[in-house]
Amino acid sequence: MRIIVIFFICLIIPNKLWAQKKAAPEIIVYKTVDTTKLKITIFKPEKQDTSHAALVLIHGGGWNNGKPEAMYRHAKHFANRGLVVFTPGYRVRMRNKTTIVEAVEDALDAVAWVRAHAKEYNFDPDKIIVGGGSAGGHLAAETVFNKTVKCGASPEQFKANCLILFNPVLDVSKKGYGHKKVVEEAKSYGIQWKSLSPIGNIDSSWPPTMVMVGDKDKVLPKDIALKFERRMKKAKNDFSLKLYPDGEHTFFNFGYAKKKGYPKGTPNKYYYEVLQDVDDFLVNEGYIKEHIKVEIPENAVYPIQK
Image (cartoon, rainbow, N blue to C red):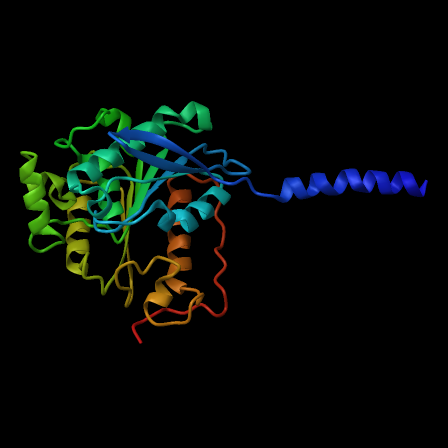
């Protein structure tokens, strides 16, 4: 009898360990340009939410640099909440000697690729949330208003059904961010810089949109965020703006505390609050079914400049 019990324990324990082990994200090539292979990372939920929604998260970096890994922590949270999450790479100036135009093109193609693979990854192609931070937030917004940058897909294929924008570049005018470079690069493609500026391309077709920004952000100043809010509401769009006191640019990232002089690993309170606000927004919009409370570590701080 003792031998039989041990035998069954040996069978059960490996199965339990296997069940507890989370599957590694899948990384595949979604687009090839000459010799450049652009990859997308896919986080599959262990238990999919009944909404069957998907989320695309686009990294920032001023269209200059950055990698998809910057959004992995957020991606894992929302995969744990039951969404299928995608984090695409795209061409940037420093690595690829490209412009904002190629970055937009790749972002649109990435979202179109995601929609085309809805059946394979078991989500609703009409429930694609697109989000991003900083320049990635600009690229996410481009999926809604782009009419000038040519890519391999149509607006019906790349348009987001919902937007979550973390301190996004909303204005590329002289009052906004990157104006001189954007003007130069757009001109080289015969494009007007204004066609690349979200704040100047608002109409009533925008999907539910949430913008999160610190009120000390210099890339997206508070007055521009409030102006964007006024225009979105004037167009009668479903819009939510969240301002975070004393938050500066990239305040929403977990590692922001280290950037502000705190010891490595210090939890950023903003990070958890933003997660909670986005989570609540997606529940309210029907992309996740049930509310949760995001736990904030006791030692979390607001990393104000020391």
